[in-house]
Length: 87
Image (cartoon, rainbow, N blue to C red; front, side, top):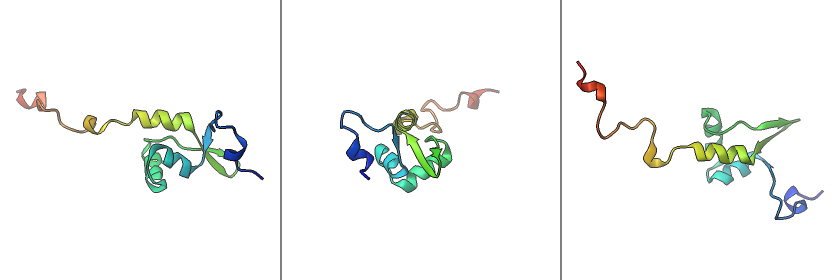
C-alpha cells in the first residue's frame, strides 16, 4: 500500500497528520509537542479507531495563538503594578 504522501498530489496537502508530523509542523520534538498538548497550548488529536490524528488547521491556529517571546503573559510591565501605590 502506498503512503498517503505518495498518493496525494503536491497541490493537495493532507489535513490530518500524525504526532511526529504535527510536532515537525511547528518545529518542536514529539516530546515537546506532547507537553504542549497536555498544557492545552496545542489541540488534542482526533481518535480514528486506534489512530490519533491532528488537524493541520487546528495545530496552525494554536501555534499562532502562542505569544511571541517578547509578549510573555506573566511578565510584569515596565511601569510596575498600578496597585502598588494605591492606599
